[in-house]
Image 1 (spheres, rainbow, N blue to C red):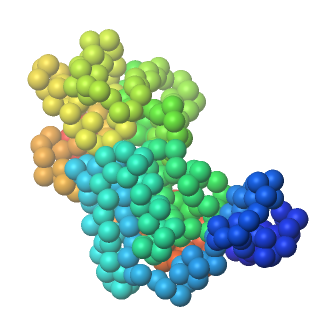
Image 2 (tube, rainbow, N blue to C red):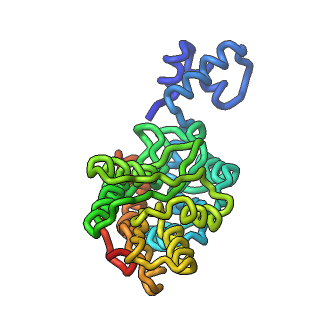
Image 3 (cartoon, one colour):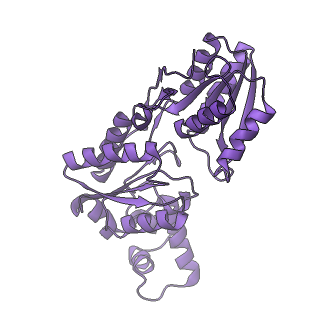
Length: 322
C-alpha cells in the first residue's frame, strides 16, 4: 500500500507539503497541489486514517449493492452472502441500486469514510474512477483492472456447453438471445461468445438476437424473435428469467416445447425448479459463489492478497430440451 512518503517522492515535494494537500490545510501553490494530486491518483494512495481503519477499525459491516433484489438470481446470491457474513461475525448492509450509479457511488463513499468495512458489488455502471486497488471491494461477473478481484462462473464454457447440448439433441439452426452494454464489459458477455464460437466450430447456423440492456419491452422483444426466426429449433437464452418468458410465449403460440423448439437458460435458480415445464439450464453454483465472495472481501479487509475466482458450471436437464 502506498504511503505519504511515496506520494511526496513521486510529486517531488516534501512530506509536509504532501500532508498539507492531503489534509487541505495551509497554503500550497496550485502547481504543487496538482503534482501531489496526480501522484495520489497514480499510486492509488489512501490517507493514513482511512488505511488504518481498514485494518484496525473494522466496523464488521459489509455493503452489498445489487441492481435489483427482485431478480431471483441476485436475491438467492444475497441469501448466501448474508449467511456467510454472519458466520464470520459480519453484518450485511443491502443496497438495491436499481442500476443507478448514484446509489453505488454513495456506498463507495461510505467505504472511503470507514462507515463500512468492505463492499461486494454487482454493477453495470462506469465506477472505475471511484475505486482504487487499496479498497476492500469484490465484484461479481466484472473485473476492473488487475487489482480489484471478482467472482464469476465459467460463462464462456457455459455457452459452449449450451451449444453442445442443443447439437446433441438434434438442433441444426440455433440462436442466442440476450443483451449487451455499450458502457461496460462483463463476464456475462462470454456466454454469447462461447456459444457463438462453438457454433462456428461445429458448422451449425447460429443467430445472435441481442438488444442493448436494459430491454425496454422484453415481451415485444421475444415475440418478435418468433416472427423473424421461425426456422430456429434451438435457443440458448442469457438468463433463466428471460428463458422462462420465452417458454411461455412459445406455448401461447402453440409451439411445441421441446419437439419444435429446445430452450436452455442460464443460472439454474432454485426458485423456479418447481415450475412446469421445468426449464433446462446451465447452472451456476450460486451458493459457492456467494460464500467465496465473502471469503475474498474479508481477506481484502485484512490486507491479504487474493485472486479472482471462477466457478465451474453444469447442465441441468429439464423439460425444455429433448
